[in-house]
Image 1: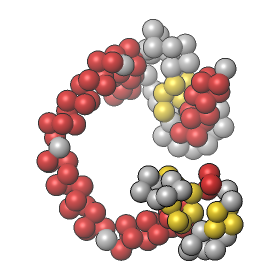
Image 2: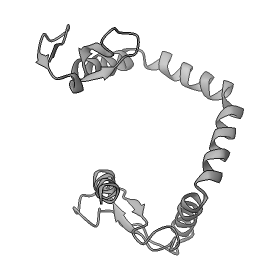
Image 3: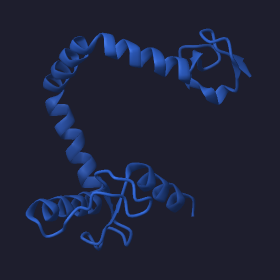
Length: 141
């Protein structure tokens, strides 16, 4: 158990973000306090964040392109399937529904390749939480 130095709550170590610069390896603020602070800071400094993001994107354009190409090469079936679905949706071959096929929440759903990437246009349309849940179940099976 560890005490949060901001809210003074006694919480387990898993409630704190990792921080390799600290002796015990975790932050002095719990995740809730840390996230609330960052949300507030980002809201107050929108323009500064935007400028930083633009400058970072410009400075690291070549590096990002290199890493993206390496990642796409290492995961090529996934990227091929993703691109085919994107093109099919935008050309009108596949119609993206406006709700999740699992929980029926009104949202712009993600395409999940439930048969694998060998069948790129066979997808189930899921919201982000349902898509994440399906992948977690698949990883644990």
